[in-house]
Length: 252
Image (cartoon, rainbow, N blue to C red):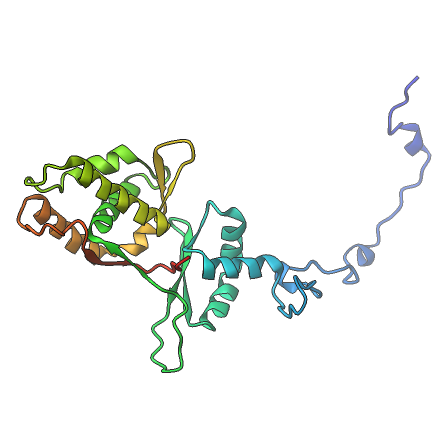
């Protein structure tokens, strides 16, 4: 017959063992260490002398090399949130500023405006064409409308941009080709990302930093003028805009 894992008979005749508070709450126990408080950090490679935990080092590299770090990259975003001050300090040594947006959950590095003649630019900006910045302005508003599900269809982007086609331009195919070039430019700048197996894109929250409030107002007025025919430059869809994708994007 099965008596159970803890038969009551085993405890009936046993004398209770008193607990010594001094032993239970003594300071002799091994202290709980934070991640940054580890005594020994194993080197990642031959010659590694960093005193930072491995995940902080890798996140630091990501912030320098990648356009941005978003909540979707959980392993990096969690480190940014936990070790923001350490990362900010290390980046400043390179003349870089760490921008963290906790509302939309993304982070990126920006080149600091260091007046010293000895400073070097680590990051390079990418200038968006007028067509790409027009599309970015549209996606900016789309993101603000639905930040929790910022997904846009390719067809919707094309339909929106077709409104800017001059009445004198009768080549729809050529104009749509320019629109797809603008979409690729935003993809290359890591402002949007294609969803595999679909014709849709995710809009990254970093778009709220690429376009400032002033830029949104100025560009919005300019594009309305173009759409109404007030600006009649045939090269409008290909010219460079005044807005730069300067949120830490590095050229690959």
